[in-house]
Amino acid sequence: MTNTPQRSCSDQRVVCPTCGGSGTLRLGDQSFRTCLDCLGQGSLPALEAAETTAAVRNESAVRTEAALLAGGRTAGKSRLRNAGISAAR
Image (cartoon, rainbow, N blue to C red; front, side):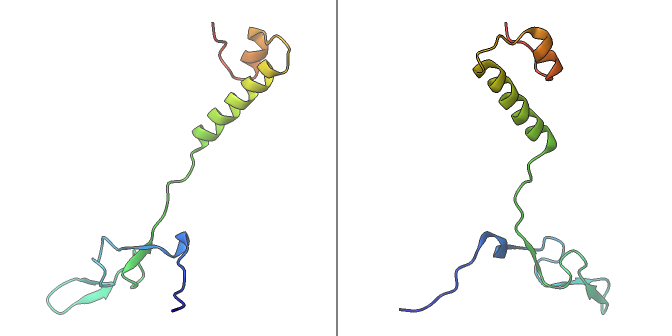
């Protein structure tokens, strides 16, 4: 049984689109420089999309509305408006 190291999500990398994975950029016939996007490594970390502030605000508003409605109290339009939620008809 071989012991192969497990790779976590943070270890995944993608080929640098600027240098094509070489880590260097050709400036002329005999002129090269290090790729500054990948810092000469030839690959970049595979990043996942971040959660936006709008998504967090929307999720918070849904939870607030659910808490108001589940609390057994009648949520008037003014209370919902103060919480930033439009009243459903």
